[in-house]
Image 1 (tube, protein in one colour):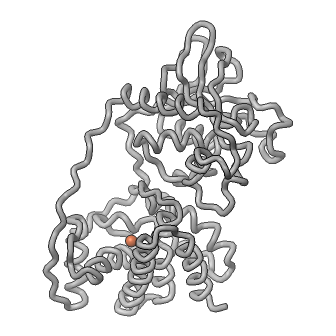
Image 2 (cartoon, rainbow, N blue to C red):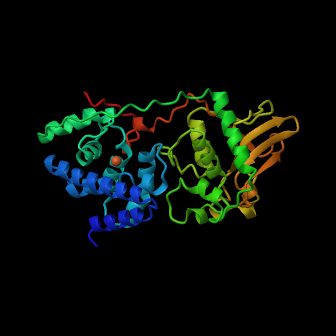
Image 3 (tube, protein in one colour):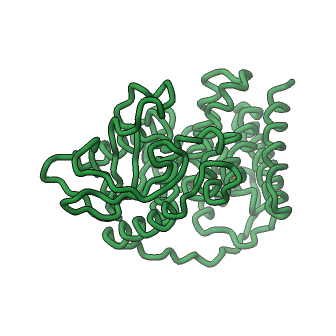
Amino acid sequence: MHRLETIRSYVNQIISGIDNPSDKENATIHLYGVSSVCAILALKRGLDAELAAIAGLLHELYFYKTGVRPFHQHSCAEMMRPILREMGQLTANEQQLILSAIYHHGDQAHIHDPYDEILKDADAIQPFLFEAGLGLAYSSLPRLMKVAKELGLQVNPEIAEAVIQPLPMNNIAMRNHLADLAEERAARHIVGIPEDHAYRDITHYWPDDHIEEVLKNGWCAAFVYHCCMQVGFNLPIRMPHSPCRLAGVVAWYEWAKSTHCFIQDAPDVLPQRGDIVVYHYIIPPENKPEEQRETPTDHIGIVLSCDENGYVVAEGNVNNNNVSGIVNRPLHENIEGFIRIDSSYEYDGWKYDYKTGQVRVIPLSE
Ligand SMILES: [Fe+2]
């Protein structure tokens, strides 16, 4: 099968899985529309139209598959990484060009590489072409005008009303909110089976097929991720250059250390409500998958309270037994440390170039 055909059949399969008919229609129009504009811009700029068209077809698939909007560009690049590799029809360099374009496509205010720019430009102009300028986001205007000039088009877009963003919570309120939510969810004794609606809610951020089965007996980190996303502490499914996705304890541990919000356990350290506790060697070896037997950090939960008698923790998948619960744990036993998220923390993956991992911030106007 021709590779563009392979991609189309993959995209069509995901679109056919969208339940809501109008969402299905929007996905089809947007993905195929952006893909066509990508091909036109590539031809105009002397680049490969097929690669640009592929990037356009794939660029929002994470959002259309999961319904998760925050940082969907970064999660989509992570979703497509193994898919493109396993497809076996694109070179490593071609895969990088496509993934980079997907990763950066939401950053319309900055300039990246030529294929990244094609996708950003196409994503800005396609809604305008489809709805003749109805309600264009203000942030898309500079790009739209730039592309219109390049193509010699006269456009006069209407700008949509700005959406007012809520003020961020202070850090104590946010961590309390996180603990409240984790407590309520964990107390439901959610079971890690596809039939449990609450479990499907916890796993729906992860785009792999049969994810409920994949995470069975291993969803403590997915539970923490779900609680964070529910209270507005948004992260993509994988941090740039992290060894694994945030469905794994190691990813949380590595991220917290790299952002200095990790507190190593020590005799004088007591956590607060809403801290995330990272355990080590707490899961019995017979309950661990073969490949994780040597990994020290093996469990994670959200602290509800702490006193001289111990911790009370909300956990998904308590002891890898596939059921959520609220558990009492002794102080300083099997504790690696605590993640204390500050509400001033902002995910800054947009600053890093996908291909090099280096900081790259070049404003569009320059
Ligand atoms: Fe888009």
